[in-house]
Every structure is written in structure tokens, then in C-alpha cells.
Length: 254
Image 1 (cartoon, rainbow, N blue to C red):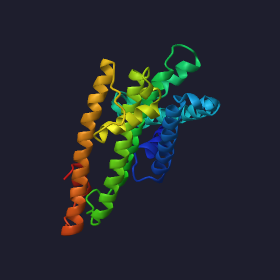
Image 2: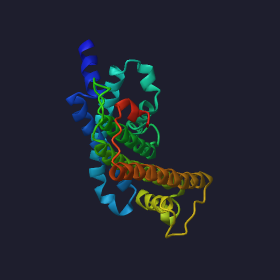
Image 3: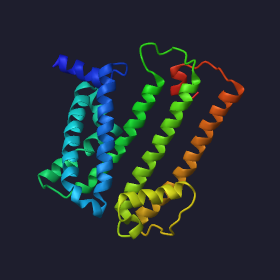
Image 4: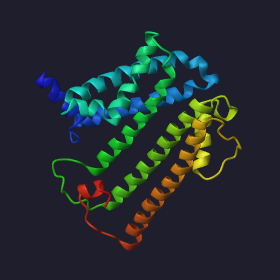
């Protein structure tokens, strides 16, 4: 049992381990494929691909189940992981499929909460960006590398916001033509974030209206992030800023 805990800890919590990088890359890829599959399942014209979607779903759930069990075993405080945000998301992302298989309750639509797992991709990207290892106080001389990764993380954040809010709009407003599937709902969210919409469709439900307000607010926040990133990059490139930063400084946003 101790050996199993050591192996799982190496895989899921040792950021400098090769096993951590490989396993989490596989899980991130599986998460993205699973999310894309769930999105495409809502498109009626793609119903002929249902057998393929089902295979992807089952394979993904098996991988996520092993991940969840592994993280529980390796967690220093199991209760803290189980009831943490990502712990609950990991559990919710697999339970609906098991319930669906046994026909206990119609929870198939709840699988879309797995989209929240996309946030883990951002977290792992941030970890790799910070280069966390045993030398936590190593100076980060090449800030241009940090800025490039900031841009990548920003793009991933936009995609995550569009996918999450688009899926929520689909759940609440799918009776309207412009929200008939997740791709259409995502397009509506993206238009709103960019400051305008080609269509004049507005949410009809209270929940949809709240999501619409959150979408507009998210657009303002993302604009602020973009200004911050671009401002720092221009300052570095034009003024030649060479301030030394530690990993801890970057974590704290200094």
C-alpha cells in the first residue's frame, strides 16, 4: 500500500517528475477530446457518430476514474482533496456516466459539468510555466518566455470561458434556435465577450439572463487581463526591463 501511495504521489503531485508530465498530458488530452465529444453530441446532424461518441465517453470515464482513485490515494489529506473544487469536479465528471449505464436516473446531461475539468489544463500549464522544483528560489532571467506563456494561458482562459458559459446557455436556453446546440451557444457567448452580437437573440429564462450578465462581466475581466499582459510585454520589449523574479514572486503576481 505504501508503494502504491508513493507511485500515485509521484504521478499526481511531484511536479518535477517525468511521470507527472506524461500522465497529466494524457489526462489533459483526454479531457479536451471528451469535451469536444460532448459539444458535438448536441449537434443533431452528427447523430450518426453516436457509436464513436460512446466509445470516447467510456474510455474517458475509465481514465478519469483511475485518476480520481489515484489522487485520493496520494492526497496527504484525503478529505481535503475529495471536498476541494477539483475533487468535486473530478467526481461529478464520472458519476453521471455510471448512473446512465445502470439507468438509475437521467443524469446524462450532467456530464457537461466535465467541461469544468478544462480549468485543470490552465492550472497545469501555470505549474509548468512556474517551473516548480526543488530550487524554488531560482531567478527567472528570461522574462520573454514567461510573457509568451502568459499569452498561451490567456487564450486557454478565453476558450474555457466560452465553452463553460456556452454550455450553460445551451442547458437553459436550448429551446431557442440560436442556442439549439453548444457550438451555437458558444458563438453567442463569444460575440458577447467581444462586445457585440450579430444576432439579436436574448436569453428568455432567468438563469439564462444571469449567464448573459456573467458573460458580459467576463468580457470586461478578460479585456483587463489582456491590457495587463500586453502592457507588461511592451514594457519588457521597449524599455528592456530586466527585473529578476523568483517563482514565488510570479505565483503571487508580483
